[in-house]
Length: 133
Length: 432
Image (tube, rainbow over all chains, first blue to last red; front, side, top):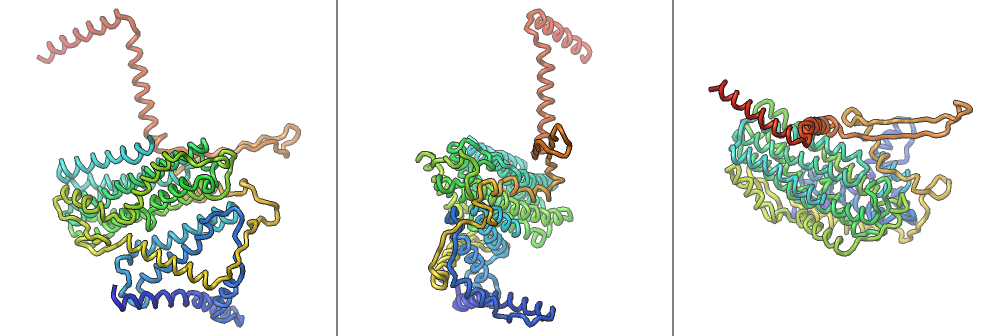
């Protein structure tokens, strides 16, 4: 673990977490312009996020811890991928973790967690969310 | 019993193949190992396909054993292929992966069968469609099954991830670094990678189904709703198997030197892996550390949970799940194991060949009124009905034919002796 790798890992996490909504906003903006609309602007997903985060969170009755920890787990699994995959630098902070199979499996694990959370609600909608994955 | 059968006994077959093929006969021709590899891949894919459509918990686990033994045989076959192609380094790697998978499979399958036994003990049913909601009443069993399911779906940081990672490494490096491989092997090895990947994906679906439908959601029957946690002795057994699973998941390097040494001994090569914290492959590129991965995940979870706590509103409200305004949802609206697997069953229709039957009983007065609709669906195991059933019925028919000779009459038995003696004498006269 080198200093460069550590700095690169932190930078990658910041760039990807901060940039992912911007990428989504950029894609929507391009699409809006192609369709002849003004579009909401590139930072709209970030505005949406700020609004969503300030709202109260609602937990469906009859769900367990699986439902509650699923979002945290999914984001964490993706965050690990964001840190170890070579994006800003190839000097990975965790060279022993970075491997294509591990990255694919980590992303699949994130999907599994969401699917289990969907099943945990015990409604057909949760299962359908699973199927949409 | 099924834990012992599925976790310990099946490994003897692998032991026999490795012992006879690689050790006693010292390698053998290439096509043997090609056959082992292809049969292994076929049984892995077929086994997990059967598992994904099963609703009987124990049969599902049994088919998952078929799948895992198939994966082990893929490793053994690849190892033999590499050895025949004169590449002992990759041969040792493939055999190490296979033997480690035998070990991890034994650990997590024991855990899964013990927790399935606990479920059967508590609810009296093995049908996933009749279970559900067990997490509240049986938290320890649920945690044990969850750990086993994570291992069986070969996701990091599960128990079987390391061995499947090693297996994939040994398969993908083959065509590039082993120059002795011929055309057939160079085509079969990438196909084996695809088969292993398909198997892993279906295993994920299988165990999401088993865990999500069987243990999460709400109870589907009164028996499942009335389940109670099993006795401490059963839980202790699960705890032991679970501890073995966790140890193998976090620190496979504890057992890897022994496994790699055994593989190296058989193949007369050096050990294929080294390292204490990270697993470092010898001879080919590749390094992975389950311990560091778990540490990174823990840091990430802490960071995300902390950020959420800092960023979001603290207010949390519990509410009724969305039901389209149609009143409280019952367990009838939940996904069942059957409906969960239905899309997959549709995709693999040609392989599984399910039997579906819809009976509509019309009203006596008019054909436009329906009195009852009966829907039946079953997915018979084609190997069982097509291969084993004919052999078994032939053996039974042979036995019945033999029984007709033994009527219980002593005179007849004396007659048999006399005729046999005469026949032998005639044979002697003719052949001399």
